[in-house]
Image (cartoon, rainbow, N blue to C red; front, side, top):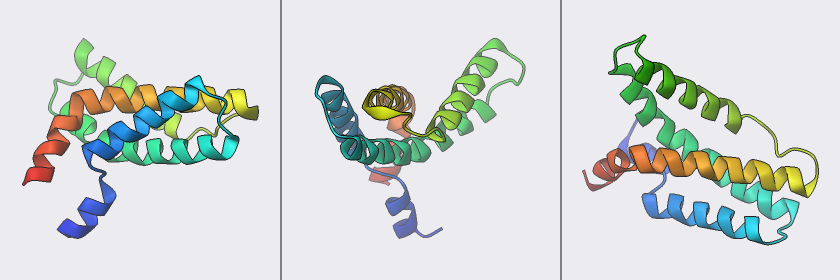
Length: 121
């Protein structure tokens, strides 16, 4: 993979934060289903970009330990969550966007620094 392809594939941290802020704002408003779909798609892309750092971290841990199990279970749940649709109606879409935003924030807090290191390299 070329550096240009990697840059397109992984968002910068400011874009991730901006999308999380959009999701938070949409949660306090009425937002249309189309708006929520757009935010969900962005969050899913950010999560897919951050997940490999979490998987790499889990791969370095002792398999079978409580920490490894907890991390792997959370990462698996996040992976499954990004495969879910927006649910039925606007309320279902709001709930799904909020769940994606929480997962994205969690990944950003834990693995965003690794992404920042690769941005400055």
